[in-house]
Length: 254
Length: 254
Image (tube, rainbow over all chains, first blue to last red; front, side, top):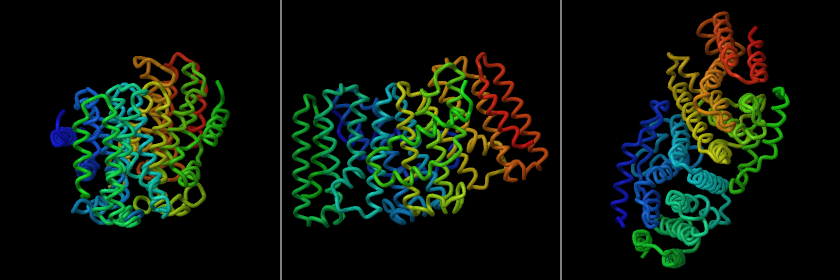
């Protein structure tokens, strides 16, 4: 099992060499600019595929597709029409760097290009999982802008959780894990998404941390981490890298 | 062969009953609002499938997917960041009716939902054709906002032509037309897209009509219509409904 850092290097190299659709022309610059990030989701995808006994390399198009969908959502969410954030990851947001029209189109193109990647597999299942996740995420973002945060858990399950769950789910299709064996893997993906969201909220002091108080949010994170570990233990495979990902997330709130 | 009006009724009924992804919640309203239109592209898709010997009904998910992608592009293009059009089809544009944030998300959701529809087929080819067309269309829109209209033909080939060509191309995959037999069908799709664009420009007195003058644009349309007819004649099938579509477009400039 390769460590998360080693899988991250794989993703970086793949994204760097990834040819975008030639017809996009000058949109390539803003799209690549938008693709910064820690690669949390693609690393989960690769680690899942390896745990399922298939070389991580086979999941690279799926992993990249997830990262493109994640980046698409950030580009659009940062726009004045939604969150109006001028900065992202310490530098100008895409709409500030390139203008709003280009940001709108670059986001659209990242989403469409993600499907093209997910469609490199012979089965439609990989792309179907991506479509469901993207739609759930968009639904979560809609709840967010409508201020419908009375149900914070549902909002986050959609807005963050769906793409985390798909990072595992797409890997299961790539690795050809039979549907009847997918349940514990998917339970793990759900808990990991929840854990990530709570940790993020504790670090930023918003969301769950603001709603419940920091201590209660930490407890919630610890419980999610425990359920994620339990799910991994019920999988008859070497899930050590996935366990490492859980621990590195869990430690950030303690 | 059913007439275009009869195929249009099929599309309307399918779109009206189409269940959207439940997680989209309140986005359903603005998405359905955005789905007005003349159904030009889906009718071409259904007519192609029938000409290829398969019941039009089998192409309904593909045809609807094309219409969703077309609608997505209009919603985003109308936004202030791009064309800043307050009206569409005689009523308020989505961003005026529902706000810019909702319009942004409704467009995103239409695009993702389109892929979900194209992924209902057992082959990935239908969705791959849609992805390529959407990416080409976005590339064309980028050329448009950058004012790179020195090559008007290339701009339109991408912005309008790609989706027209995909209306035929997706139908070929649905009908399982072997790749070696697709060339004349695809030539027809290309010419039909060009014909539609020129006719549209003549009626609006912009684009080709503004660039070349109305008479030269009409001549260009007549030549495209003639090439479309030639392409149809080289197909060993009953393409009478497709021919009818060509004639109803061609007559609009004469």
